[in-house]
Image 1 (cartoon, rainbow, N blue to C red):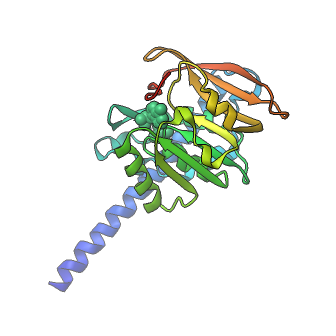
Image 2 (cartoon, protein in one colour):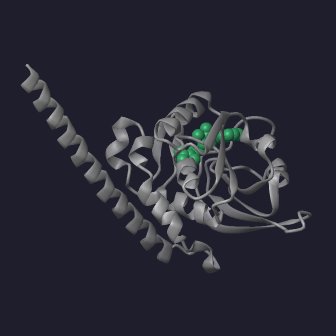
Length: 242
Ligand code: SAM
């Protein structure tokens, strides 16, 4: 009996180790794909360059832990995947681009609007001091918070709420990353950005092609500029008055 149990445990260990090896190799392929896309996707000037630290973070974060079991074998393909409640985890290249555009630094406090699975928050958490992430759909917020805690992403705080209004308690933010498409740039998010801070946000009509915008707040905090960088397609920013 003892020997049967030992054999079963050994087999489980070998299978788990083989699966981890497989996922590590798949993650490396995903990073190579992101690097190749970064050379070809026409993002203006140097904005399209993906920072090496972002690629390292994406090598590190186990995307397969953030997707439902039935799509786990596609976790490292460069495409969005369903995460339930009509929502998606974004395409890895877009996660890399948005993270890089946010110009994360070790002392930064970042707000993410649209936690979804928690994957983008996990990637950001590897690069900054603290991530606050807000999600409208309660079960998604609850599951993402549990997943991030279980995986040890201790510098991410998730709460359920309407991110259109931002998260006033922890302002100002060095950067804000919005992962759902808004019809316009939410005024509260501009307010909650630190002078000199930047926001990355898809802006446009629901269920059509939107613009990925980079918003720079002036160092004096009194004005901001916004630039459209790339056509993208995101699920809509829902909730509240728009
Ligand atoms: N960043 C996510 C990830 O890594 O899995 C993917 C986000 S998914 C493309 C967009 C998310 O925004 C969805 O989970 C959706 O429920 C959420 N959302 C939509 N409107 C929102 C709002 N007003 N406030 C907060 N979250 C919102």
